[in-house]
Image 1 (cartoon, rainbow, N blue to C red):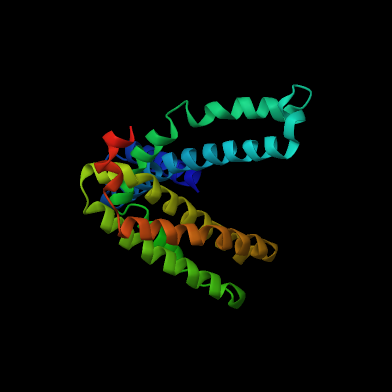
Image 2 (cartoon, rainbow, N blue to C red):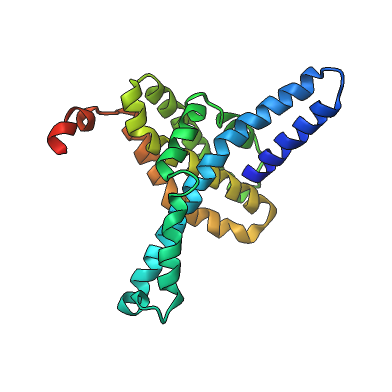
Length: 219
């Protein structure tokens, strides 16, 4: 999905460069594609690299001590994956890159578009759960936006996680609408991640400055 919006952005930019006369509609499309590309790109790197680290960590645990030895490839994967959420910007910098767009409601253009999808009857309960997630995300965004800059930075990763889980859920719903075998995968994904969306939404709606206020004592 991220790649699609990056490609659209480049296509609109090329069309604008080739068009001698200004085209307001094309300019509007280019601006919209740019906003989504800038929102999704850091979220994709954040999620993919953190998940890569999580998968390799679990693989190491499954192998146990023998996985720590060089006889098994999991040892190399475990070492190699660690740099992915550091180079080209750490995960924290990816969150910083995304937070301005998220607070500006840039992602909600897509969330609202997906919310209007017509889905088959077996998907309706799951669609309804994602709709609830969308509304909670919007409320949490507004709540965080009203906080101080320090509070925004402190809680930005929770907002990024909500955005990632909801985006993944909607994309899987689209897959399940086209390919019925994806339905069970969607059920599992939502069962795992929607509780996290609700949890992080509650954290943002009731953001507590205790961690910031006690920073010196904690350190």
